[in-house]
Length: 244
Image (cartoon, rainbow, N blue to C red):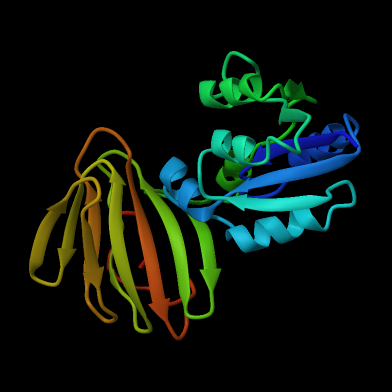
């Protein structure tokens, strides 16, 4: 039996992943899929759109897939761990021998595993799908990265020199963490400037505003908590775009 292994974040899963899995299975008799963990996704892009358990379960239920393993270590270490089983290691259309991690190439060579790259064309990407779900606002845009009962996570991008309305919320608290750029934050009479990886907490009913003071986009992560989370819970006091 020829075992084919492949790896993917699949955050979130789309038709390009499905094409890769189908083509990988055609190379052998048994398909083993390494799914990168939430921790690795956060290290790579700063957030998780779909939890690892959900990603793994979706892939596990695809007809051509025989086994799924969530991997919290470099894929090269997973290849080594399963090297006594793997005959072929295959990667999707966006991977070539020139852009694959060197450690993965060396692991395949070390254990005599055939390496196959570029399975199909890259017909979709998770990052593009996430970007396409963004909500455009006069000051920039926001994207809901994840939400559940009593919480939501957004990525907010503020255009250069733009600012959100002076506002407050009745039913939700917010926790902001700057990823790129510099944010001038006003909470009541308190004023501060946040740089990369710095955070601030905004309780419900607190009047607040964020301003991008730079000539490049500001990006921050907003975690909302509360009994009711929706865009109707915004009371605007001042607004540069006439939305009061």
